Length: 282
Ligand SMILES: NC(=O)c1ccc[n+]([C@@H]2O[C@H](COP(=O)([O-])OP(=O)(O)OC[C@H]3O[C@@H](n4cnc5c(N)ncnc54)[C@H](OP(=O)(O)O)[C@@H]3O)[C@@H](O)[C@H]2O)c1
Image 1 (cartoon, rainbow, N blue to C red):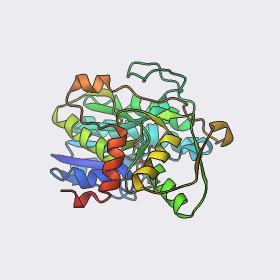
Image 2: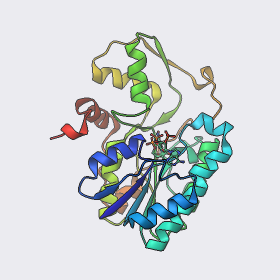
Image 3: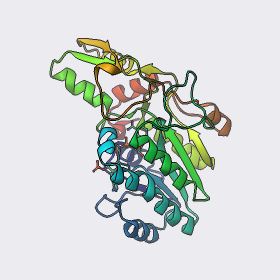
Image 4: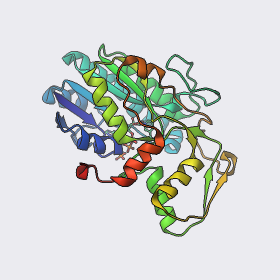
């Protein structure tokens, strides 16, 4: 199977490169496969002739999106429509990676796929537009995930480890709840989803839930590091973009659709700490 991946320099694409080794993978660099250019999308897709396109590329800097909303809409929304058209022309499957930020975070139980969306940020609104655009392709799988990280990349795990290495006292938000999700767990679940021919919209995060503070505490415990860590509130750290206070996504539909391989977030964290380099995995 030929698989074309966008956003090659990002953390999810990095892990897909290491895990989807049974497939003919093509990950063009962003200078060539620029989501901001319809002509680039058309020519790469018609040259590569993929069976599956995984759209990992996005304008993911949530706070910058507030100031650069036109660019956010172009990359996270409009470009997905161009990808959908290119996939439709080839009858390829489009996998669109989306986000918990499509919800406003006022929920009190895990969000289901049919719950009303109400994004509170430019990032969330433009990613929701990306979902709508992806659905233009007959064969589409829209996967909402949350709090993505892995051993490599710009993410919460590495931010915490770098800050702790500098000996800094850390205050971390304890009033936002979600599910930390490893890129490797998501990449494995995507493989299963393709093999089992899932279609439509599905929530895919690691099991369980915690706060950013709980996540940080677990990281330092797993690493055996003594760190001066204390909880704080969202109000203590105002940011340009609003984040959902509660963004746990229900896995019920995923379990109904087929084989659910998502681990508990603590187990997934242990895997990343024990095997940071996936190429060395037994
Ligand atoms: N990270 C999370 O917590 C999280 C949570 C839920 C959903 N998601 C979604 O999951 C997907 C993968 O996220 P990730 O964590 O792997 O993000 P990431 O590491 O930021 O990767 C996204 C990549 O897209 C690239 N990109 C930006 N503009 C582009 C363009 N015009 N053309 C082609 N590529 C472009 C970025 O390149 P530059 O860095 O050079 O701009 C970056 O390498 C995204 O769709 C994201 O919205 C992420």
